[in-house]
Length: 78
Image 1 (cartoon, rainbow, N blue to C red):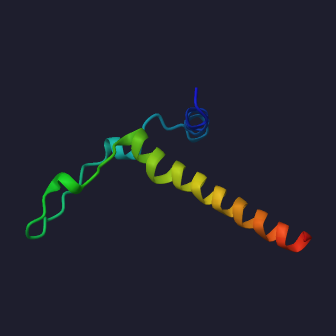
Image 2 (image 1 turned 180 degrees about the vertical axis):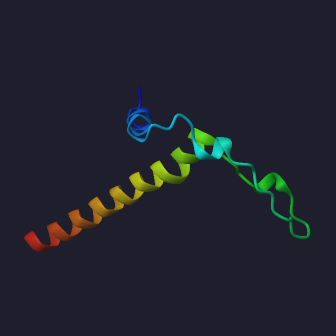
């Protein structure tokens, strides 16, 4: 079981919700511009949408903040 699955399970238990909002929400369609096709749109549903657009973004920000603080600490201590 991955860390994401662990956090997902804990989140569902705390929130008492058994499904993702995007699973029950209707898909919005947008008007395509001239010479544009739908091939370029990446639409994730449910679990994958939350993982890509929320979980991975949070992990990325945490890592960048840790790296930034690590550089500052090294600069101060030297």
